[in-house]
Length: 316
Image (cartoon, rainbow, N blue to C red; front, top):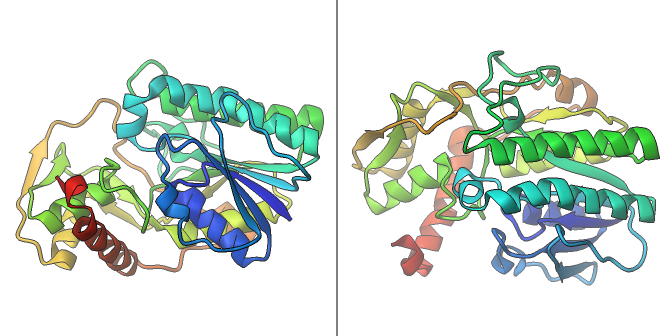
């Protein structure tokens, strides 16, 4: 297939480029580098790969045939979407509309990267795909939550009205190499702080829970979903659940860091529990995560150590 990947220079988008190329497909990556980086694609040397620098909120322009679109363009960490709320809303609405327009024009399928954030601060645990969520639409995180909720709605509208073969993946916490050092999410925050010997910042009492899925596991689930006949949303994530405090202590153990743990106030609308119910992915896709948290963290740690050694300015 010829596959277009929006957000192709991002953390997950670049891993998807690798997987699709490894499967023998032709890949066209699209990104405007608002949060992605050319470095994430610099290792690719294939005649089946090409890149287009475009802001998909303004339009997507791809010549030739397109068989499938993996729509992954969006700021995805709180640091990014709190700084870029309007761009986040625009790519969720206008960017998704443009991606669907391209799919319709080319007769292509489309997979939307949605998020566990559409469940908000959940009142149901673990979260199944049937749960409608508990979201503060006007809170500081609302720009991301509502962008993705709207994106899901317009994807399903195009599926029902225009018969486009659409898929929706609801992504839970994912980590791995190519995350940005200053991403702001818990894995890069703790690893960077531990490597540098800085205090590990835990928000609130640290009893809120998270689940962590390694990037290659997540990409495998996404690829299986793309190749499946399923059109309704599917959770992809690791159901193993840890408190933030447990995770901080694991990072200290793996890094051998003597960094103290310090507590800061919990941000507004920060979810207290987050764990996917992956029954649907197991049954429909035959998928479940394979990489343990310690294995994945070790690989991510090596990547971050190398980055901090070669990019001392960013470390500051």
